[in-house]
Length: 233
Figure (cartoon, rainbow, N blue to C red):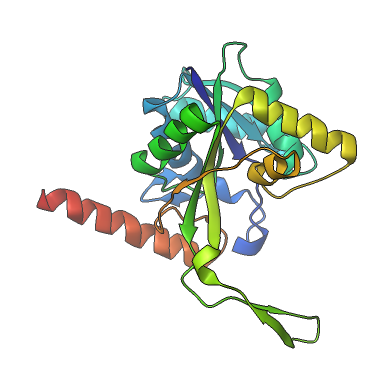
């Protein structure tokens, strides 16, 4: 099966306290978006990168600067929502795409192991969504802050990306959601809404999403630990 990636680079820097897009921030000197794209070169035939209209030129320039122009087939504008952005990415995939891996450009530290697990699950079962078990106690509360329920954390997982699917299933799920006016925060929810099975695969705590300034510090620390581990081999 031929696999392609959709890398979502349409975020903002609002919660980072920035006016520019956070995915152009650097981790150990390399832009986050480059770190997010590069690991997929070992598993996919190519990628489509989704960018904000105002970032299209800068996105193309960064991709070219870091030698990813041959792998990134197209840079396309995002939609009004995450769901719309993925839909635009799906429309830009080559006709021979069997599997698609949707990945957040702000998850700049994804590993080969996480990508491979999601990809293999999609090939075998139709879907593979990176996730990590919830370790904190999770409580449900009403608007006043009154606890109404303590959830069983054994059954709870935090979703990550990549989220891998057979292309025809994801397209069908998007079409069904669009027809019903349903909007979801991730693609796995679209398959659930369409009554299709969603299988979780092993994510990793290091596969964090860059959202706040603290995340940048965590990201730098993770990269240092990785370099130290490599030096000990």
